Length: 244
Image 1: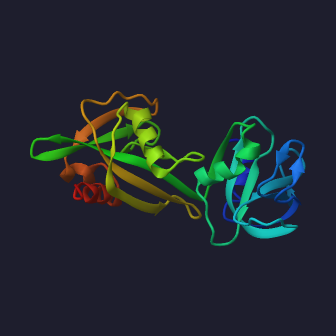
Image 2: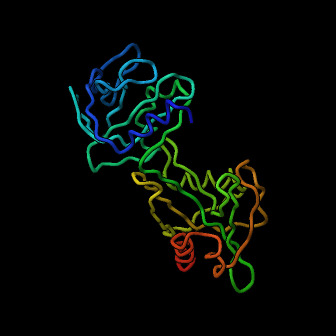
């Protein structure tokens, strides 16, 4: 992360006032703005001009708006990051943000840093004797064990994200077991929190690890989950298994 991104990332959770110069319904060239867009007076962006910001959670045209910075869009092929601002107490995860700003951000390669992150995944299990076994993956970057999961993308449902991540990381395809859904939430910084939604899916055979961030995998019994996972994640997996 460069100095520009570090600077804008410090704004996460801060209250700012946005001067709106492209309100809902504004036509800029071929782009019709479905949300309010403007700039933060006095705050300079990476392009030497005042910092631009999207406004979510307000569907009517505005002239100005005061709200909290819920995300920073880091453009990798542009000199300026974009802020995302929303009313106090209203949050959007990175998938919802990506969908809302797609009308303009589709032309850039970017990463969204948000104060509310949401991931979805599958708790893969196989029947092995008396007790079933769960599949865990060892993440190369974090050095931790987890179930297959990943961030929601624009326009995805929870189920679609979970199935996509399962296939991308293990090569497995499965049918999610109806009503077998569990969610856990925890803080990842002083201003950011993360929600992880899991679904239960039975798999057959052995995984074919496909994602470069996965180093290895392991099948474990329900009673062993606590050795590898956060307590709330291990409990969620065992609760899911109890529903079948």
